[in-house]
Amino acid sequence: MIFGKTVNKYYLRYTHLFILGFIALVIVDYIQLEIPALTGQLIDQLVEGNIDRFGIIDIVSIIGLYALIIIVGRFLWRLFIFGASRRVDYGLRNEMFAHSEQLSNRFYSENKVGGLMAYFTNDLEAVRRAVGPGMIMFVDAVFLGGLAFYRMFSLDFALTMYSGIPLIFIAILGAYIGNKMRRKFKEAQKAFENMSDFTNENLSGISVVKAFVKEKSEIKEFLKTNQIAKDKNIEYVRMQTLLQVIIRLIVSIIFVVILGYGGYLVKSTANSADPFSIGNLTTFLMLFGALIWPMMALAMIINIRSRGKASLERIEHILNEVIDVFDENVVDVEEIKGEIEFRNLSFKYPDGSEDALHNISFNIGIGETVGVLGRTGSGKTSIVDLLLRIYNVEENSIFIDGIDIMRLPLRKVRASIGYVPQDGFLFSDSISNNISLGLQKRVDVYQEIQEAARLSDVHDNIVDFSEGYETIIGERGVTLSGGQRQRLSIARALIKDPSILVMDDSISAVDTKTEETILSNLEKVRKGKTTLIIAHRISTIKDADKIIIVDEGKVIDVGTHNELMARCSFYKDMVERQKLEEEIEVA
Image (cartoon, rainbow, N blue to C red; front, side, top):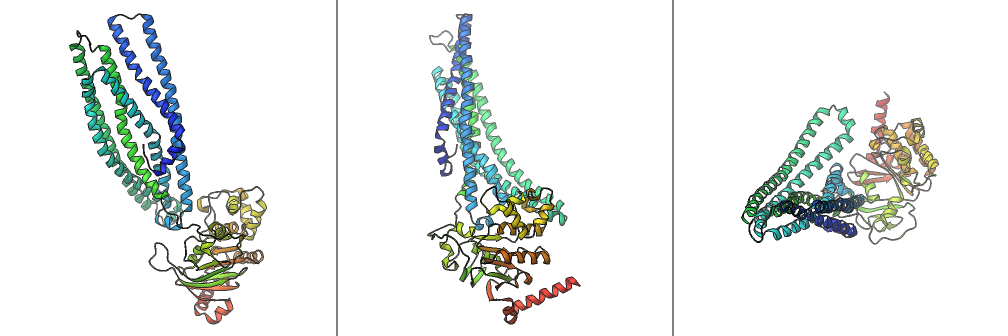
């Protein structure tokens, strides 16, 4: 049983299920403790010989009826409380995913995706068990244990005290070991998180592992990671086992005390006015038998609560993570037309020590096709990230249609931009679903999908697949070539018909002829719309309306191909180098 602002709202939301479950549980516990009294009564009457066959049938029938009520009651409390815990699990998972979707790239640069999967699996399961089974054990232990003690007191005060004193040691020991178990479980979960991240990263890059013949070394690294996870779990299990063994030992000692002292009471009070009969001893033993479960449940409660509390703290690490890219004081705009201005912009990544961009300024008019050229690491992709508002920027440093990007609705900005990333990320889904990702779900998009594929010169490749556009591609498009992935990414952006198209070095993996086809198609369909092409190859952007030269995070020149050839030594040097490379390749 755990509490905290993250789960308390779910207790309130499903209060009716918990209440119905607790009512069924309490009824079961009460009826369960009626059976020892009936059994003791039957034994005493049999010993005394003052019960006939019909009396025996009556008592046995009542016990049978009670057993039936217990069966139905146990079904009902499982249905209500376990059902509620599953709903809490479902709600938390949805909440975690929705929140994760809104977190910026900063969070994902600090937390690996493979590790985050542990939060959605092991940690949520630990919380669910604390909310469901843990809650049942707690209520069961309190009510059943309390009622059993009350009835044991009514039979013999001294015998109950002898039986109950050792339970104080269980409580003290449980609190001490429980704290240690919580710390051990957090360590075990962290080790599992690291192992999950290693596995995810390794299998995602399996082609690289095989290409460099690193299977054996990667297996060795996995064994080390797995060994750490195993050791941490064993440390936790040792604490858990120690607690269970101690509780079982104490329970066994109490049982011996009851048999010894209870037998003495039966013999010593046999001829007294208020004898402690064999039936009383049987009832007492059965009540203590019912009490064994709450005492054993203490160990399980401590175990489940320790795990649940540790996991809840980890889950709250995600849910409490601040969403740092969001709308604030936005202005309402009907549409974005595509005029872009960077004005004296400087930018440093959240985890960076130096500016990635420094005093960047340039203008892009509506309908212009603009190339961005620069060496690797010069800041080209940073420009795209800021245009997509992946990160926050200083006010009055980027304008779209003359409006500060920080005042524009985030969804409006991103919906108006068709983005083709460098890596051409694709989902493990059908080709048609990947291309139509940016469209609203509807049934009449097949023609649009085909047209977008033709524009990106990938249609012929698709129809050659056995399932055509319904072909399921592997994770991250692993079954496709680099050029096919890039062209599918281009089709995915073009089908949106965005006001602004951004291509981040996204035709680098295609041959020259295919590149010419794609650029020719773009020229036809992108008339009147803004297109921003980031490239390494001069051939990709030489016909652009203007070219922005970026180096070491600064804009060093802006102009057409001919203007830059005449005045920009950096650009001219890049052109000559690429010509030389082409001549060497031909030779």
